[in-house]
Length: 334
Image 1 (cartoon, rainbow, N blue to C red):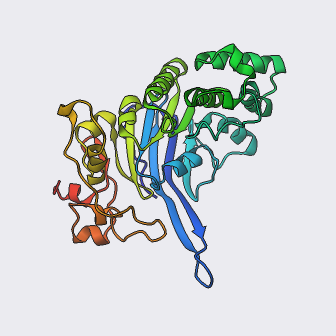
Image 2: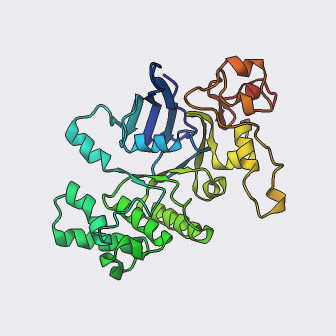
Image 3: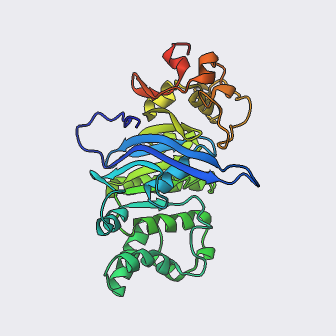
Protein backbone atom coordinates (compact mmCIF):
# COMPACT_ATOMS: atom_id res chain seq x y z
CA UNK A 1 0.00 0.00 0.00
CA UNK A 2 1.32 3.41 -0.94
CA UNK A 3 1.64 6.13 1.64
CA UNK A 4 -1.05 8.77 2.03
CA UNK A 5 0.48 11.74 0.27
CA UNK A 6 -0.31 15.08 1.85
CA UNK A 7 1.21 18.51 1.66
CA UNK A 8 -1.02 19.86 4.41
CA UNK A 9 0.67 20.61 7.70
CA UNK A 10 -2.41 21.33 9.79
CA UNK A 11 -3.02 19.09 12.80
CA UNK A 12 -6.76 18.86 12.16
CA UNK A 13 -8.20 15.66 10.73
CA UNK A 14 -8.78 15.98 6.98
CA UNK A 15 -12.36 16.05 5.76
CA UNK A 16 -11.66 13.57 2.97
CA UNK A 17 -8.80 11.11 2.62
CA UNK A 18 -8.07 8.71 -0.21
CA UNK A 19 -5.64 5.87 0.47
CA UNK A 20 -4.03 3.92 -2.40
CA UNK A 21 -7.13 4.06 -4.62
CA UNK A 22 -7.09 1.70 -7.56
CA UNK A 23 -9.63 0.94 -10.26
CA UNK A 24 -8.89 -1.89 -12.67
CA UNK A 25 -11.15 -3.04 -15.50
CA UNK A 26 -11.13 -6.41 -17.28
CA UNK A 27 -11.36 -5.93 -21.03
CA UNK A 28 -12.06 -8.61 -23.64
CA UNK A 29 -9.47 -8.61 -26.43
CA UNK A 30 -11.18 -10.92 -28.88
CA UNK A 31 -11.64 -14.54 -29.80
CA UNK A 32 -9.28 -16.93 -27.98
CA UNK A 33 -7.33 -14.06 -26.45
CA UNK A 34 -7.02 -13.61 -22.68
CA UNK A 35 -8.73 -10.66 -21.04
CA UNK A 36 -6.54 -7.62 -20.46
CA UNK A 37 -6.46 -5.46 -17.34
CA UNK A 38 -6.79 -1.71 -17.73
CA UNK A 39 -5.39 0.10 -14.70
CA UNK A 40 -7.45 3.28 -15.02
CA UNK A 41 -6.36 4.33 -11.53
CA UNK A 42 -3.31 2.79 -9.94
CA UNK A 43 -2.61 3.91 -6.38
CA UNK A 44 -3.79 7.49 -5.81
CA UNK A 45 -3.69 8.94 -2.29
CA UNK A 46 -4.40 12.44 -0.95
CA UNK A 47 -6.07 14.43 1.81
CA UNK A 48 -8.53 17.32 1.50
CA UNK A 49 -9.32 19.82 4.27
CA UNK A 50 -12.61 21.63 4.82
CA UNK A 51 -13.05 24.74 2.71
CA UNK A 52 -10.15 23.90 0.36
CA UNK A 53 -9.88 23.00 -3.32
CA UNK A 54 -7.76 20.13 -4.64
CA UNK A 55 -7.32 20.23 -8.42
CA UNK A 56 -6.70 17.05 -10.43
CA UNK A 57 -5.08 17.75 -13.80
CA UNK A 58 -3.75 15.76 -16.73
CA UNK A 59 -4.45 14.71 -20.30
CA UNK A 60 -7.55 12.76 -21.32
CA UNK A 61 -7.18 9.15 -20.24
CA UNK A 62 -5.05 9.85 -17.16
CA UNK A 63 -7.75 8.70 -14.70
CA UNK A 64 -9.15 12.06 -13.51
CA UNK A 65 -12.82 11.26 -14.11
CA UNK A 66 -12.39 7.71 -12.81
CA UNK A 67 -11.13 9.19 -9.55
CA UNK A 68 -14.18 11.46 -9.40
CA UNK A 69 -16.54 8.51 -9.86
CA UNK A 70 -14.80 6.59 -7.08
CA UNK A 71 -14.96 9.49 -4.63
CA UNK A 72 -18.71 9.84 -5.18
CA UNK A 73 -19.17 6.05 -5.04
CA UNK A 74 -20.67 5.92 -8.53
CA UNK A 75 -18.12 3.13 -8.92
CA UNK A 76 -16.44 1.00 -6.26
CA UNK A 77 -12.63 0.96 -6.05
CA UNK A 78 -10.78 -2.24 -6.87
CA UNK A 79 -8.52 -1.46 -3.91
CA UNK A 80 -8.01 1.28 -1.35
CA UNK A 81 -9.86 3.39 1.21
CA UNK A 82 -12.04 6.48 1.06
CA UNK A 83 -12.28 8.09 4.50
CA UNK A 84 -14.86 10.82 5.04
CA UNK A 85 -14.82 12.58 8.41
CA UNK A 86 -12.67 9.74 9.75
CA UNK A 87 -14.94 6.91 8.55
CA UNK A 88 -14.16 4.50 5.72
CA UNK A 89 -17.06 4.71 3.25
CA UNK A 90 -16.27 1.23 1.96
CA UNK A 91 -16.62 -0.50 5.35
CA UNK A 92 -19.62 1.15 7.01
CA UNK A 93 -23.13 -0.23 7.37
CA UNK A 94 -25.80 0.50 4.75
CA UNK A 95 -27.70 3.17 6.71
CA UNK A 96 -24.59 5.16 7.67
CA UNK A 97 -23.28 4.89 4.13
CA UNK A 98 -26.53 6.29 2.73
CA UNK A 99 -26.29 9.35 4.97
CA UNK A 100 -22.60 10.08 4.44
CA UNK A 101 -22.71 9.47 0.69
CA UNK A 102 -25.08 12.44 0.41
CA UNK A 103 -22.28 14.67 1.70
CA UNK A 104 -20.12 14.07 -1.38
CA UNK A 105 -21.84 15.29 -4.55
CA UNK A 106 -20.74 15.68 -8.17
CA UNK A 107 -21.17 18.29 -10.90
CA UNK A 108 -20.69 16.73 -14.34
CA UNK A 109 -18.84 18.19 -17.30
CA UNK A 110 -21.64 18.56 -19.82
CA UNK A 111 -24.61 20.63 -18.64
CA UNK A 112 -26.42 19.68 -21.86
CA UNK A 113 -26.34 15.97 -21.04
CA UNK A 114 -26.51 15.88 -17.25
CA UNK A 115 -30.00 17.41 -16.93
CA UNK A 116 -33.15 15.46 -17.76
CA UNK A 117 -34.76 17.31 -20.71
CA UNK A 118 -38.21 16.00 -19.77
CA UNK A 119 -38.22 17.56 -16.31
CA UNK A 120 -38.59 21.17 -15.27
CA UNK A 121 -35.88 22.82 -13.20
CA UNK A 122 -37.95 22.58 -10.01
CA UNK A 123 -38.40 18.82 -10.48
CA UNK A 124 -34.70 18.33 -11.21
CA UNK A 125 -33.66 20.17 -8.05
CA UNK A 126 -36.23 18.57 -5.76
CA UNK A 127 -35.63 14.98 -6.88
CA UNK A 128 -32.65 14.43 -4.51
CA UNK A 129 -34.75 15.76 -1.61
CA UNK A 130 -37.70 13.56 -2.52
CA UNK A 131 -35.51 10.45 -2.60
CA UNK A 132 -33.29 11.14 0.44
CA UNK A 133 -35.36 13.26 2.85
CA UNK A 134 -38.81 13.42 4.42
CA UNK A 135 -39.41 17.07 3.57
CA UNK A 136 -42.91 18.01 2.44
CA UNK A 137 -43.58 19.28 -1.08
CA UNK A 138 -43.77 22.86 0.18
CA UNK A 139 -40.49 22.49 2.08
CA UNK A 140 -38.76 21.01 -0.97
CA UNK A 141 -39.91 23.92 -3.13
CA UNK A 142 -38.78 26.43 -0.51
CA UNK A 143 -35.31 24.90 -0.38
CA UNK A 144 -34.98 24.68 -4.16
CA UNK A 145 -35.95 28.35 -4.45
CA UNK A 146 -33.30 29.26 -1.87
CA UNK A 147 -30.58 27.32 -3.68
CA UNK A 148 -31.62 28.81 -7.02
CA UNK A 149 -31.15 32.27 -5.57
CA UNK A 150 -27.67 31.32 -4.31
CA UNK A 151 -26.53 30.28 -7.80
CA UNK A 152 -28.01 33.31 -9.55
CA UNK A 153 -31.20 31.82 -11.00
CA UNK A 154 -34.55 33.63 -10.91
CA UNK A 155 -37.80 32.37 -9.46
CA UNK A 156 -39.44 32.20 -12.91
CA UNK A 157 -36.80 29.63 -13.93
CA UNK A 158 -38.42 27.11 -11.58
CA UNK A 159 -41.04 26.02 -14.15
CA UNK A 160 -38.82 26.01 -17.24
CA UNK A 161 -37.17 23.10 -19.05
CA UNK A 162 -33.37 22.77 -19.48
CA UNK A 163 -33.47 23.44 -23.25
CA UNK A 164 -34.69 26.96 -22.51
CA UNK A 165 -31.38 27.94 -20.86
CA UNK A 166 -27.91 28.85 -22.05
CA UNK A 167 -24.89 26.66 -21.25
CA UNK A 168 -23.86 28.84 -18.31
CA UNK A 169 -27.37 28.79 -16.86
CA UNK A 170 -27.57 25.02 -17.23
CA UNK A 171 -24.32 24.63 -15.34
CA UNK A 172 -25.75 26.84 -12.59
CA UNK A 173 -28.71 24.44 -12.44
CA UNK A 174 -26.30 21.49 -12.22
CA UNK A 175 -24.40 23.21 -9.39
CA UNK A 176 -27.68 23.94 -7.60
CA UNK A 177 -28.68 20.27 -7.86
CA UNK A 178 -25.33 19.29 -6.35
CA UNK A 179 -26.00 21.55 -3.37
CA UNK A 180 -29.53 20.35 -2.58
CA UNK A 181 -28.41 17.78 0.03
CA UNK A 182 -26.03 20.21 1.80
CA UNK A 183 -22.79 18.43 0.86
CA UNK A 184 -19.40 19.04 2.42
CA UNK A 185 -17.48 17.97 -0.69
CA UNK A 186 -18.32 18.69 -4.33
CA UNK A 187 -16.49 16.81 -7.06
CA UNK A 188 -16.49 19.11 -10.10
CA UNK A 189 -15.62 17.11 -13.23
CA UNK A 190 -14.49 19.62 -15.88
CA UNK A 191 -17.38 21.93 -14.87
CA UNK A 192 -16.46 24.81 -17.21
CA UNK A 193 -14.77 23.10 -20.18
CA UNK A 194 -17.97 23.12 -22.27
CA UNK A 195 -18.57 26.86 -21.68
CA UNK A 196 -17.38 30.02 -23.40
CA UNK A 197 -14.40 31.72 -21.78
CA UNK A 198 -16.46 34.67 -20.48
CA UNK A 199 -19.03 32.30 -18.99
CA UNK A 200 -16.26 30.16 -17.48
CA UNK A 201 -15.15 33.09 -15.34
CA UNK A 202 -18.69 33.66 -14.11
CA UNK A 203 -19.16 30.03 -13.10
CA UNK A 204 -15.73 29.85 -11.42
CA UNK A 205 -16.45 33.01 -9.43
CA UNK A 206 -19.83 31.56 -8.44
CA UNK A 207 -18.16 28.36 -7.21
CA UNK A 208 -15.62 30.34 -5.18
CA UNK A 209 -18.36 32.49 -3.62
CA UNK A 210 -20.33 29.37 -2.69
CA UNK A 211 -17.20 27.84 -1.19
CA UNK A 212 -16.70 30.85 1.07
CA UNK A 213 -20.37 31.03 2.03
CA UNK A 214 -20.97 27.31 2.63
CA UNK A 215 -17.42 26.20 3.58
CA UNK A 216 -17.41 23.72 0.70
CA UNK A 217 -14.45 21.58 -0.29
CA UNK A 218 -13.87 20.94 -3.99
CA UNK A 219 -12.15 18.18 -5.90
CA UNK A 220 -11.78 20.12 -9.13
CA UNK A 221 -11.01 17.97 -12.18
CA UNK A 222 -9.61 19.82 -15.17
CA UNK A 223 -7.16 19.70 -18.07
CA UNK A 224 -6.88 23.51 -18.13
CA UNK A 225 -4.15 24.84 -15.85
CA UNK A 226 -5.26 28.45 -16.35
CA UNK A 227 -8.57 27.51 -14.73
CA UNK A 228 -6.80 25.60 -11.96
CA UNK A 229 -4.65 28.65 -11.17
CA UNK A 230 -7.83 30.61 -10.52
CA UNK A 231 -9.51 28.25 -8.06
CA UNK A 232 -7.16 25.64 -6.55
CA UNK A 233 -5.23 25.47 -3.28
CA UNK A 234 -3.35 22.23 -4.04
CA UNK A 235 -2.78 20.41 -7.32
CA UNK A 236 -2.28 16.77 -8.27
CA UNK A 237 -0.84 16.08 -11.73
CA UNK A 238 -1.73 12.62 -13.06
CA UNK A 239 -0.32 10.55 -15.89
CA UNK A 240 -1.72 7.16 -16.96
CA UNK A 241 -3.50 6.50 -13.68
CA UNK A 242 -0.73 7.58 -11.30
CA UNK A 243 0.26 10.76 -9.47
CA UNK A 244 3.45 12.28 -10.86
CA UNK A 245 3.41 15.55 -8.89
CA UNK A 246 1.45 16.81 -5.87
CA UNK A 247 2.09 20.30 -4.61
CA UNK A 248 0.58 23.66 -3.72
CA UNK A 249 -0.77 25.84 -6.49
CA UNK A 250 1.85 28.50 -5.80
CA UNK A 251 4.72 26.00 -5.97
CA UNK A 252 3.41 24.33 -9.11
CA UNK A 253 3.23 27.56 -11.09
CA UNK A 254 6.46 29.00 -9.69
CA UNK A 255 8.61 25.87 -9.70
CA UNK A 256 7.19 22.85 -11.61
CA UNK A 257 9.59 19.91 -11.17
CA UNK A 258 8.23 16.91 -13.08
CA UNK A 259 8.91 17.01 -16.85
CA UNK A 260 5.25 16.30 -17.59
CA UNK A 261 4.12 19.19 -15.39
CA UNK A 262 6.62 21.46 -17.11
CA UNK A 263 5.22 20.46 -20.52
CA UNK A 264 1.64 21.08 -19.43
CA UNK A 265 2.50 24.52 -18.09
CA UNK A 266 4.46 25.46 -21.20
CA UNK A 267 1.36 24.86 -23.33
CA UNK A 268 -0.88 27.07 -21.16
CA UNK A 269 -1.63 30.40 -22.88
CA UNK A 270 -0.45 33.52 -21.00
CA UNK A 271 -1.54 37.08 -21.78
CA UNK A 272 1.44 38.55 -19.93
CA UNK A 273 4.64 38.00 -22.00
CA UNK A 274 6.70 37.92 -18.79
CA UNK A 275 4.82 34.80 -17.65
CA UNK A 276 5.15 32.85 -20.89
CA UNK A 277 7.33 29.74 -20.89
CA UNK A 278 9.34 28.17 -23.68
CA UNK A 279 7.10 25.61 -25.33
CA UNK A 280 7.99 21.99 -24.56
CA UNK A 281 6.66 19.71 -27.28
CA UNK A 282 5.97 16.18 -26.13
CA UNK A 283 7.04 13.52 -28.62
CA UNK A 284 4.72 10.60 -29.25
CA UNK A 285 1.24 9.76 -28.01
CA UNK A 286 -0.14 8.92 -24.60
CA UNK A 287 0.57 5.18 -24.09
CA UNK A 288 -2.34 2.76 -24.20
CA UNK A 289 -3.57 1.73 -20.73
CA UNK A 290 -4.03 -1.76 -22.23
CA UNK A 291 -0.29 -2.00 -22.77
CA UNK A 292 1.50 0.50 -20.51
CA UNK A 293 5.27 0.82 -20.90
CA UNK A 294 7.63 -0.70 -18.37
CA UNK A 295 9.36 1.56 -15.89
CA UNK A 296 8.19 5.16 -15.87
CA UNK A 297 5.06 5.49 -18.01
CA UNK A 298 6.28 8.88 -19.25
CA UNK A 299 9.80 7.85 -20.27
CA UNK A 300 9.08 7.50 -24.02
CA UNK A 301 8.01 11.16 -24.20
CA UNK A 302 10.50 12.61 -21.70
CA UNK A 303 13.63 14.53 -22.71
CA UNK A 304 15.36 13.62 -19.41
CA UNK A 305 14.77 9.83 -19.57
CA UNK A 306 17.66 7.35 -19.17
CA UNK A 307 17.99 3.56 -18.93
CA UNK A 308 16.72 3.50 -15.35
CA UNK A 309 13.50 5.19 -16.45
CA UNK A 310 12.92 2.39 -18.97
CA UNK A 311 12.87 -0.38 -16.37
CA UNK A 312 12.12 1.07 -12.92
CA UNK A 313 8.88 2.80 -11.95
CA UNK A 314 9.62 5.94 -9.88
CA UNK A 315 8.06 6.28 -6.44
CA UNK A 316 6.37 9.41 -5.14
CA UNK A 317 8.86 11.14 -2.85
CA UNK A 318 9.12 14.48 -1.05
CA UNK A 319 11.23 17.25 -2.57
CA UNK A 320 10.86 20.51 -0.68
CA UNK A 321 7.18 21.50 -0.81
CA UNK A 322 6.32 18.97 -3.49
CA UNK A 323 5.77 15.23 -3.88
CA UNK A 324 7.22 14.01 -7.18
CA UNK A 325 7.63 10.64 -8.91
CA UNK A 326 10.64 11.11 -11.19
CA UNK A 327 14.11 9.54 -11.39
CA UNK A 328 15.54 12.66 -13.05
CA UNK A 329 14.44 14.81 -10.10
CA UNK A 330 15.84 12.23 -7.64
CA UNK A 331 19.18 12.19 -9.47
CA UNK A 332 19.15 15.99 -9.79
CA UNK A 333 19.29 15.86 -13.56
CA UNK A 334 16.53 18.52 -13.70
